[in-house]
Length: 417
Image (tube, rainbow, N blue to C red; front, side, top):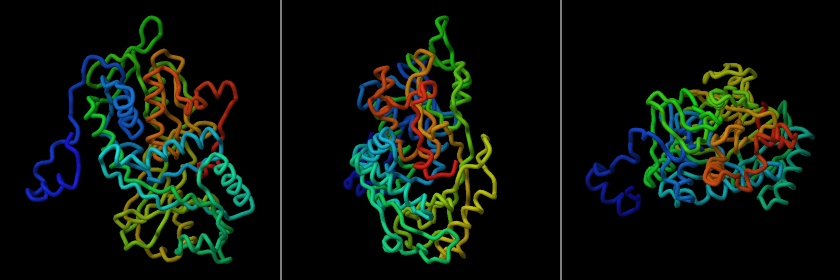
């Protein structure tokens, strides 16, 4: 892998940038691997990278039915934060945020990480009490979070309307200053580049059509559109399609898949300094480096594998944006899209073993998957390498839905599921 540096950029600029090679290979699949990861999104690529870099396991294949980063990784609104309520969730997302802070240097790739701050607005007494509880809980866990009055919210985000004439007036907000955004495509490419450099095979256009089990019931490999591939261990990291894949091994998952929509506006000059989220009116907003307003909506109210979603969801979100930020009412929307999110009953992920030997799963991130990418990949790589959970993902077992030790993060997800 050729490293990026000021010297390499200057030398390539002198010859029209014609000397850059492919960032990762396009290998043919081998007959078998020590580990096969199903899903070439951010979580799957991060898992492969950490398997190679942290555990020395390089005989690894990442199988993606389309192109890497073409699923939810390339379809989200790129928000990164760790201000979750419960200890287990706070540990997971703070682990991810700390990895985010050094990820560009580790990968030698500009992931455009911007710690511009995430402000979560309160519109009623319940919001105020809930967010203050989050602030106190986060501080006990050593995570930065602070309460702002509505005037302080306005000072931090000048476009925000804090007048009393709003249907849902702003009463204050919780601010995590270390939170922010990153470029989703660059994250996938950076992890792919790093994993490939360490010997991992990234195999695109290779759809898994079955999971083969031996006479004892253990998983031994996957059937694909490019033939059978044997595996010592299989890690399924397929977001909204996890239920479909796991059913191939006879495992029923406590998941529901919903469309989740987002949209962007025409580009304008820098005018929005942070990320703002609102639960009560449901909308979240940031501005990309290209100048587009990046707007996130809520999940549709029906389960589906469609990536379109209902028009009424986006119009409701735009109504909320126009009420909170009146200066944007005349802006035109350029495009909208949707992803398929996998939601668990307690809105927390599942990371660990399954009842099938050699089969592991990383799923259930709902609307919060992107922000967890490095932390998720790091702990899942540990689980695949050792066969046992990392202490951070130990609470997020599939078994918790039998024992009742749930981690209910519906409120902290900041999305009206």
